[in-house]
Length: 326
Ligand SMILES: [Zn+2]
Image 1: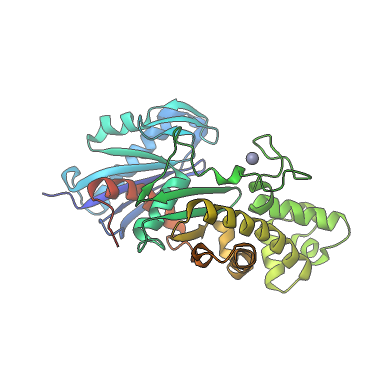
Image 2: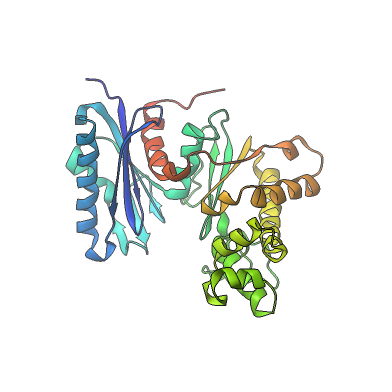
């Protein structure tokens, strides 16, 4: 029987999401299990294998019908050797995950970092289906990204291209980032940064509505800021405006560097909608010289909560087909 399914595994620190799809990215079955990383890598790998068997059983698929298995997880990792080099949230170091899965199932298996996989999900099944090049930006607790050029992931020499969260956008007077530098994009535009900035505003005597909503300064998160902004609270709106003006400035740089066909923005914080997209688009309109790249569409991601599964599936599908051309 010819292969007609692909399996995607989104391996995170708290849960493992596994899905089986057809080649159009329609999810036919999905499973979520807790990762329980503290039990060690052998237990986690066993759970991944079990999840794969379960979703195949869910739709009565045989191994011959599955073209391959894609796995995405936070890096750094090596997609060529299939080794997760270091994953602090899993407590993994140099784990040859692809070998383990191939040993069990004997079908092609692929590994990619989650942000690159998300970019691929958008290219194959989301907002980027009509283009061959895009920059995907994910704004959630951190900021990450993936670059698609000529229909495929651009990984760079050491598989670390697209680490846009550490682009330095405020070198002087910026907040220190987890990477050690000051003023990285992630320290301004991430959900974590937005929550922290709101706490600063409240500490200085402003943002009373946010303090009320959160029941005190310590409870304030990006969600609080979003809720207050939805009510029209000017302090909350100002915080979001600042966070996303910097994101817009960064997008200007990337459009000048890459001249991609689309900018696609996803991640939990992108659910803010206009509060995010309006300042980003406005800054691009203001700061870019009048070149064609100025009019590049800046659009929301479309794969939603399935982005991880679909990104992993994209790894299988892209190996099975050439990228579609316009
Ligand atoms: Zn950084």
